[in-house]
Image 1: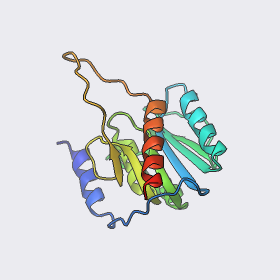
Image 2: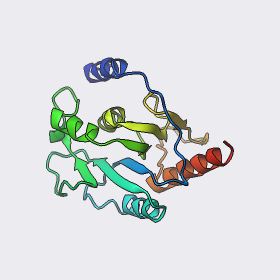
Image 3: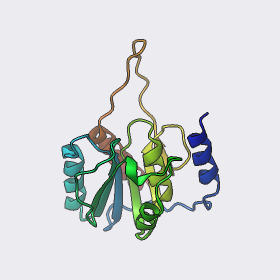
Image 4: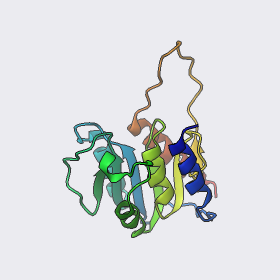
Length: 181
């Protein structure tokens, strides 16, 4: 285990205990989406997910991360892409990022991260949200974790999961669970 991971685990262990509140999707919710940005920062699938949530009368904020230093996209109140310069040498978000993240409260965090990313795990950890949902990537930050179906892969082959597929799975689970409570 590397030093950056040890620092992450230490900071995660210092976070206050969570008392999650399940979101009722029939109400107007404030939603945070976090995702892996494409290199060109276009993110068409994320924008269509945002449109779906807006149609559902949700207030949507999106934060992405791309592994490059210079970000071209403007920082807007409802949309932001972080880059390597937004993190310190230990891999932790800079203070201004954490301050901006914690300035808002969300009813629901939808983490569309499809492969391990410490940068986005920090964002998920520091987001002030009543309920956090995402893919099971081996950490305990979320209140509800989805696991991938068991696919048999060839040696060295990597499973590609699309953010739109993950979003559909998350929404299906959230609506199914809601209808049974």
